[in-house]
Length: 365
Image (tube, rainbow, N blue to C red):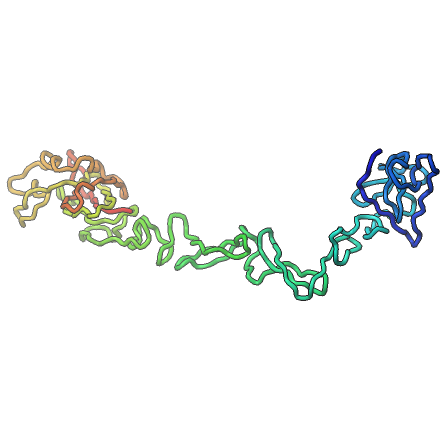
């Protein structure tokens, strides 16, 4: 015996009820006959119909049915052989006397006779939590006794999480805020142009801004010669001391290595093609003013070719052989000299070229 667990509903059409046939005792019922169990039907399907049950079977068309039964849709159960006059399910209805799906067993409120959806009872002005736009938490309010309002929330400021944006100000910088998963805007993110960052005064270029050199609020200390360029920030490094061999064969300036130590650079700021270097010492006192400078080797009454003596003062590895591009830099390791006095210089090449070369000793981030 085959058991069926599918529920079917038959209805009254135009006020006439269902009229199933009657099976003869001891003879398997034909399609449309009344029955109590599957075994009483030749088709072995005894299904609910009206206030009783009839023998039926699944079908595709009327050709699969007999005894003037029609192949009709019976709710979500599909197509079955049913008596003429059964609901065609074009207009679904609810309850045991109609076709289509009955209201859920848990329905304690009003059943919608078109959709068979159940409206749960509620108390006027009662509220409950809900979710809208996928992830946004909100509240619904009871209207009447069985209808809930749309899900809403006074705190929502947007309804397209991850997509919707609005303009804002991030400090002194223009920015954008993006709608987040709770239907509220997130923090304002600066919308600076490529190559700039948002600092206290707005979007700045950290490679060149003297007040934000290499990082926001990192102002360069202007320990500079008068001949240095107006802006002391080069590639995010602050110039401490600069020198230029104009008409001289060599020029240099002393500086003190920071203690505690910070990263340092030798930066080419005027590309004359000369040599930039860091040394532990300088030339003899100049006959003219007694100042010790590397140019004094060539300018004194008893000149010395600095090329023969200066290299002995170079700090190994701290030499830029050709300052041929503005912004060219050499990362220095002067940590062993923290707190000590050293010299940064620029001089001509062996062939006499390389005048008008300017280099700066700089600290970086």
